[in-house]
Length: 457
Ligand code: NAP
Image 1 (tube, rainbow, N blue to C red):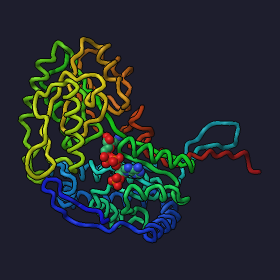
Image 2 (image 1 turned 180 degrees about the horizontal axis):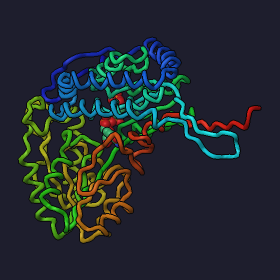
Image 3 (image 1 turned 90 degrees about the vertical axis):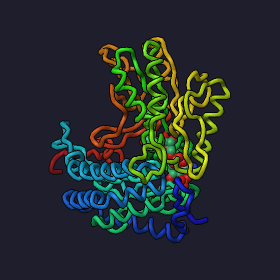
Image 4 (image 1 turned 90 degrees about the horizontal axis):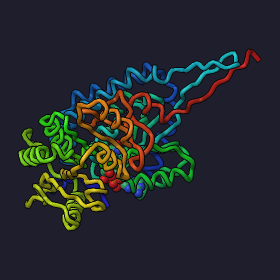
């Protein structure tokens, strides 16, 4: 079956791609292995120059790349431009800092000299999702290439145009041929690639079931993995919060990227003293958003990426309502073409229902009323996920308790959760393990080799 690029706003098939056959996959693996031998020997200065060029290409052509993302997965065009710019930022960040981050580290011992040397590990398989079709890839690729590794991208099947465009960016930037290649394969073909001895490690950003499949397979061959999985991020509002700011941020935090973001705020946990005002503001804010053609610059919410995603979200909302929740606004798909889902607020959510325990990957806010700090923390932690959390309070004591007690990999105080190339990004519990970005990200796929020199021998 060919891979299809389908416009989620219209259902129109934009292009079809022939998946790579086994012989083609073998060619790419052989090329990756050969490229690794060459690329790992290049000095940091050369890699930096190429990575800077990749940043320039992203900036020079951000309009075309943005249109490509929007047409393939439906994000509003303004957000797609910002995504291309953020990728350029990550390329520059690692171009400027990788050498320092991976410099030899002297360690005092009884040896004449002992130190840690950070060496590349080889070809790394990156299994990536469609929701940030450029950003997810660049935040892996920029540090991996700067560290001397080479990349094999298995992108989500619905974004083949983005996959091939990214391969092309690195080729045009001057990286060794084969240093970064897109494999046009479906998920069924991943295991064989992962088993190949030339593939030394893997990273996956995506759903928990996909993460478990990759980790299990990689485990059989003792290959390292980094997993960035789902989330059901709490957004906690306490009585001292600046409410206007909390409400407007809540609207953005739930609907960013059409609500299809791992770090979107999903569970709004609100103190009873401000609950009514917050919920009223949230409902009004969501109702005021412009829904429509994602290529139109006025649009704030576009279609969900595929019909299956819209159906799944609708099913989760229906099951939550059937369990006893109330719909305060939205609660259904929009009639007509495209995978549009109305911004939705659900309240009175029973424990155990989908909105309480599952990830809702679309513009559906679940609100919960709590009586105090302990209850807020307990509810926030009552999840299999532990990715991000946003807390709104002016009280220092509350802030300290949130920072120390919320079980997530990221916590933002009086701000919305976001990724930043300078800070580590990743989750705990079933949101995954390992970190991307910052020095932590570039050190995931390196061999921290201990070197001991006793004397002159
Ligand atoms: P997905 O269905 O898991 O797909 C992600 C990638 O994994 C795709 O390339 C997919 O290929 C592949 N895949 C799926 N099942 C696989 C399997 N059994 N073996 C090997 N590969 C497999 O996830 P999605 O629906 O695209 O993305 C949404 C999910 O990603 C959400 O849960 C979201 O929270 C999470 N996410 C997490 C982060 C983070 O940083 N923590 C960031 C963004 C998204 P095909 O397309 O060919 O199926």
